[in-house]
Each structure stands twice: as C-alpha cells, then as structure tokens.
View 1: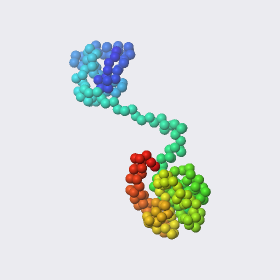
View 2: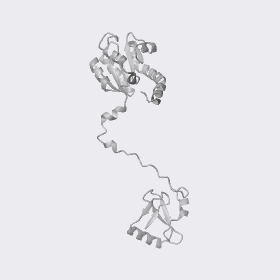
View 3: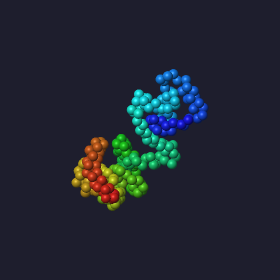
View 4: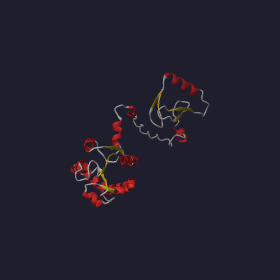
Length: 238
C-alpha cells in the first residue's frame, strides 16, 4: 500500500502487515469516522476514509496543518561531526582568537598587562628578550603588541624590535595595534605615536589605567582604519 503525505508530499510506503492492519481497521470504522495515521517523514497526522483515501477536508482542521497546504520542509540541521574530529586541533581553534605580545622589562608589570589584555579577549604571549620576540613576530600574526621603551635597552632608537616594527611591510603592519609605553611618552598623544610609527603611546604614570586607555583608543583606531581596510578589500589589497 502506497500513499503520499498531504503535508510534506513524501511517499509513505507500508509493508504487507501494515497494509493488512490498516484495511482491517478501515473495515471496522463506524460510519462517519476516520482512521488517523502519522507520517513518518514530517510526523503530522492524516486521515483516511473507509475506502482508504486521504480525507482532504481533515487538513483544514488538523492543528498541525496549514489550511491544506503542504508544509515547508525545513533545512537539515548543521553537520556537527567536526566537534569530535581529531583533525580540528586546539591550535586551529585558537586561530580566531586575537593574539597579543607583551614586551616589558618588569615581570610584575608584565603580569598586569597580561591580565588586562586577557580580560579584553586576547591570547597573550610575552618575551624576555628581543631575539625571542622577533622569532614570535615572524611566526605569529599578532593583533596587538605592547612594547616598553626600556625593554632590552635604554630607549627606542636602539631597540631592535622597535626597528623591526618600523620596517615591517604595511600589508602586515596595518593589522597590528602597536602600543608604546615609557616615561618619555605622553598618553594618547596621536602625534607622538605617529612619529614613532605606533598606534598608541602611554606614559608610565598612567600604567594603572592601561585598560581604560585601551578601551578609549581602540574604538578611535577602528573608526579611523575600518573604512580604509574595507576600501582596500574592495580593491583586492591587504
């Protein structure tokens, strides 16, 4: 016995035993009564009259129906097999997390910076020397870099890491929020930041307010550079 569900239009195929049971049930139906079946595809009800024909009038009273119209078949649920797929490693999962690099000569201050940036959603790295920092810079795409002017030296002029940042190709540099800390710098002084090829300068005396300064500077940075990034993307450039 075969029929099509009036709701989802899928074919309902019955076995010989099922067909025999339905015929017996139809033969035993009192006058005016209908036999109700459930479609195994859409799980909605359909009514058969004594002759085994689908009663179209019942569609209008079916609480799950849509005035006799076929139900819209929803899309299949997303494939979640990747959750248990070993090929999707933890390292790949972390690629979407913005990463930051902290270069500060003082371990306590370095830990405070780590805490602030982690609270802002960064995965934070740190280095104790310029050579290690440059190696990380070569292999990791950092979204934020914090450099103290006294890190591995007495100033920015002779700082190997700072010079590497200044020479970095703009195709990569423009995606890094570069922050300079130091006693000779002025907090949120855009002109000084521009002179040092940085995005933000922070004086040591404002160190305890670093998180607040970041929350003020980043929106301004995004407001300025987001249109530029978008326009470059339109033209296929980075």
